[in-house]
Length: 312
Image 1: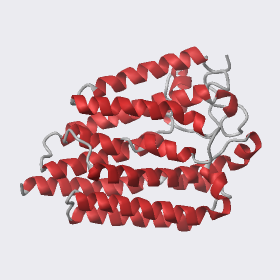
Image 2: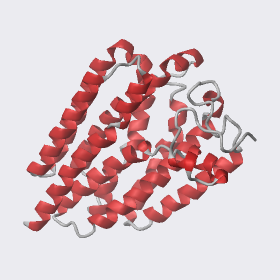
Image 3: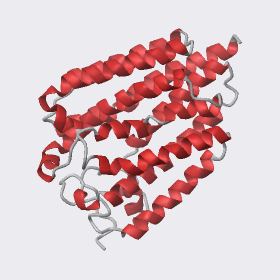
Image 4: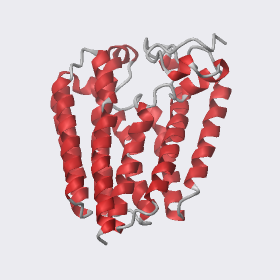
């Protein structure tokens, strides 16, 4: 085993490095608690759907609790997903400059220890899921199939971001399952829009590793799009806005939600204009900014839900 306090190359100066007990640091890094952006991005579709479904139901009495449960669930399940990803990718990660200092390829923890931490987080996620109705529980469990196969997709398809989108957008279905006990066309439109958004932002993220990925034969939309990335993002982000707008229309959303969608769209347009795929640091910053884009839309949906509940 190597030094457990050794830092991950692309994540330094965070609370794990400075405040967490030394024994816990490899586990927290394994599950990316030192860089929670992925948890926030997983959470955004959950909150969107919870707010939109509450607006449709014209009842926000359970919305605060659902928001908190989704928050906990998103963080622990993203942590479990990252642990699974690193277990399956440990040999590949050792070949990439940005990832070779992660806990498993660096030898800070064993595969057995990593798997035990994965199970612990999954059990917490299960406890969260059990707070919901039976339909929502089954819907949540169904997502595990996609999560399980995702790490292998980059080996066999140029579109692994699609599978990531299917997994990271699942929350767009969960809000409807929890609040309304169903998944309807509105939920599916929101889910599809979120998938397009995820493919777009993860393409930006993947440009950080495009050169290393080419050397070891890893496929991604970043490599597939290459110099056409700006055009591809314009198509994907436009599709995301149109599909989410369709969900708002089907769900009878009022003007606050539409303002949120306009702000969301403006942020995505800014990302495309700002992007330089040859600048890895900029790619990372733009990728992370998608949390803010998601929160803009979320704010509009929450205000809309409260307004609709008040006039019911």
